[in-house]
Length: 357
Image (cartoon, rainbow, N blue to C red; front, side, top):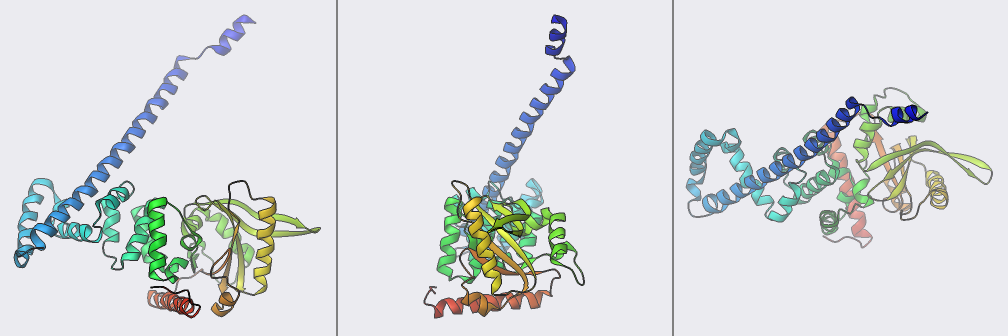
């Protein structure tokens, strides 16, 4: 019996070496990560300082007529010593970088998550609010360069409820996001949602959409936002002896809220609001935990009347309505649709006395 106990407590050399290897490898990977982050941050700050120096000392004074020639000459010398990272075009990218991000503190914070390749995607954006939006959302959600590019190409900013607010309010929300990492529903919800990755063609049912979303859950969450976590499908709620089933239930970590997604194949109907209100009240009573905010609901439909949505006050508050697209329109058509929607929303805010530029 004693021998058996000794054998159970004996750790084989192979087990010790395996555990040691895993521990050391973890230490190495953690250190590598910190070193990579430090190098990335230093590189971004270097490019910002170079851009500022060139902008102030060469392009911003009386020698500006010869500025481009000077930059060309300096670039050739730098490339010879330090490589293609200091090419003429990249030097001018650094100049624009320092110009549109004039505060070194903001650059230092962003550089902890964004590399130079991220900034190369952001620099060409002319609108300062859009630049700040993509910069901060990229930092918060830790997008790869490929994801950032896809978000810009899909006009994510224009699809948020935030874009439909007056400029002053947009800037306030972005500043709060920058200073406090605080998200709001207007930053989280989009309209429309792109569900082209589901591969749905021809006629399909709500169940088909739901099953396709679960099959492509990773891509769906990427479209929703990375703070979303899947909770349940077809969650049963027994109310007054009758069973109800909500389509999809998610949790948003930064908002600290449960979020219901109801899928509708056809056009939004006013009665859909009552159904969602029932679900939210049940979740608030039986599922909401201490420290969480009240649940939110999103009704995803193939079409909606903006007048109905406005009259029911579903363009803000705990229930939102958004369209989904299983096939993407042309870029020209899509841009016009989004810009028209933003203009209409801002006109309504002005009529209601809420507008402020």
